[in-house]
Amino acid sequence: MPFSDTLKLHNGKEMPILGIGTWQGKAEELERALDAALEVGYRHIDTAFNYQNEDVIGKVLNKWISSGKIKREELFIVTKLPMIGMTREGPKKFLEKSLKALQLDYVDLYLVHA
Image (cartoon, rainbow, N blue to C red):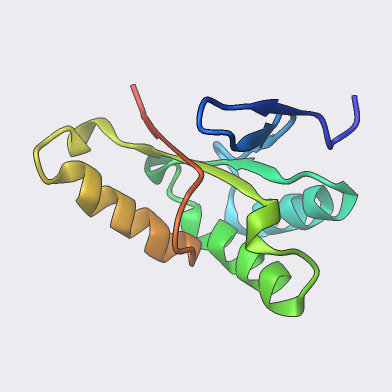
């Protein structure tokens, strides 16, 4: 399956079918894995606040976007609201934390992590 295969979501946005998961990825190995994945064409990255590695992902994404190798619009970034964020203020609070760590203005999909 080519990396360009996507699913069209209800809002018209295209989501790459194949993505890289980052659960249990530690800093140095995750940086290398993300660099390799982006190099070969991955554009869908799945992470979560609970994984405690969004800052590493943000560092890699910033490097790629700043260098002009990739545009933000080409990426599909998924992160998740932790269960402790299931309060009135939680989604906004945790999304802002994730966005800051990821060094992004938006994510493409925000899920409840349960």
